[in-house]
Length: 461
Image 1 (tube, rainbow, N blue to C red):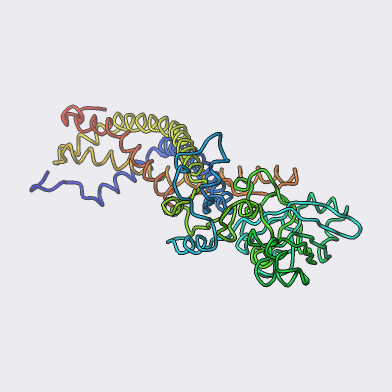
Image 2 (image 1 turned 180 degrees about the horizontal axis):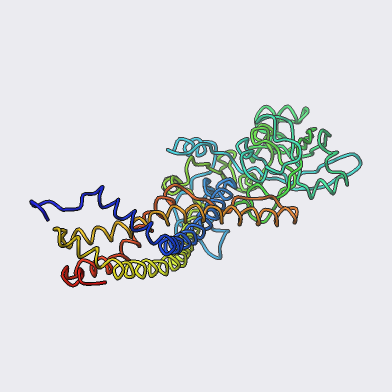
């Protein structure tokens, strides 16, 4: 110290560190390369874990599983298990009707609420006749990943008289499935009719007969409608939330609602002594963000309905990837820990080679803190350079792995994917971690150099 100030200024310190690194270029380069290899392994492993997590999250979010809540009446809970559930044991059960749909649609975070419309109908195409399960899809379903491979197009509008057929059913209708697009099929279905519409269809029936016919509140008539095939799809739109019955023909939800189709829930209304009007088997609420699913689910349960979502699965998935990222980070850090031993060895060797220099520095007033700062600067410089090079190597390794994997997938007629991701925080974290490890590795050499006796150091040859 001179006049209470350190002899080595920051600029001098950096200059000495750079000069010493250049003097032993080969040894310092090999040490720095060891650090870069450690950082590269860390970045490559973590980028793979992050990429897989982002890929899984993207796929699942586009599947519609993690941003939807399926709502049912608590009456149906008694049939979904061997005995009634605790929440089903209520004195009065609210019907899942249009009023309930409107109330749920007003909840914060809910984008839309649409009924589950699924029924069995007769499909006629040419001379063929088939009974299949038909389901309705909202217009928002076009955003889901399952429609990325759709042959043809999605519905033109919410009330377009169009259908999308499943590839399995399409192959049953024609060996050349693309030729079905643009053709028409005939849909025979049961229509629920009430009030004046049903009276008009009675065709002069007596009033007593009409009263008997409408004692349940509605009548059922057979209807036909020609619909245009606009697309052929593979896979299921909502396989995890729709139960075992898989539909093979899909039409727009608003069109299906306007057709007033007889549903399974209507059979329950026939048996009920006091009908409350048209009800739904289930409603699906689409939420703006997955983080809002729990709040919507709780609000729906408070309204007197049962609600189900894939929230628990989402939590388990995040927990799984957190553990994977942790282990990948640990294994990637092992190489960096080995590289830190190289830094220790390099700096210890530098002490032996520069004992005379250290003695001169102390003789002219340099303190132990100045000497420690010098060695810390050299260790930090190796960490910084190794960290930057390691990030570049890790990024390159990820590109090679991703390109090789995609080449293999394409050879198997599968689409390529991005399996790795290097976000900015991983770059900054890897470089910062490399500097930190290097500084820790420099603690012992710096302390040893600072403790040198200047007289003994000056005598050293």
